[in-house]
Image 1 (cartoon, rainbow, N blue to C red):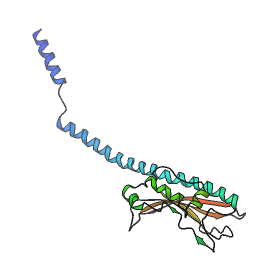
Image 2: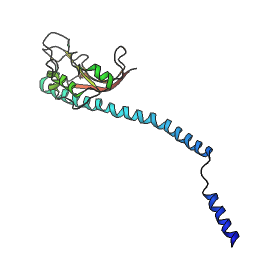
Image 3: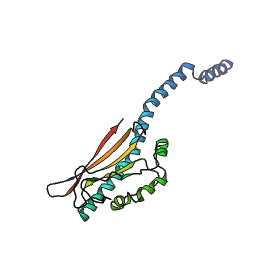
Image 4: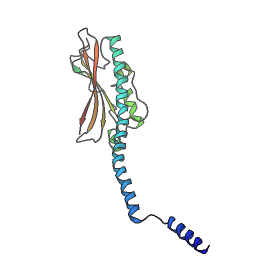
Length: 196
């Protein structure tokens, strides 16, 4: 009977033994390998999720621009006359770039740029004004003549900047306006451009 008790105590002591240092180091190494693979994938996933903002808003602008063209036989523009005038001022928000470069997102006050007199004709024409903090600048670039829908080179762009001056590294999504043989407006895209 005494031998049996001693054997049970010895067996329990053997079963309660902890992990060795080598076993712990192996577990830590496995976790490190898994983390090194998972973290970059997670970062790429977050970047793609942020880029959805630009693609989603561009699709809305393109749909509204097509509707505006059907109703007015020209693209929404604030052009005041002349031939092949480039509405290049419609890069919005055009203000608050210093804060954007620090935070990677425009402050809400930047949304006032969409109501600026130089821009609101275009953005009201396509019924577009984003809400909250935005990560993209939107460019509605119309080449044309006040007398008619000359669309050579007209395009709609969403640009997200990763660095500011002097390199201006950015990701752009772009739709290009084209007229088909029946004078129907088509937007080709979105095409992706990277300046890294």
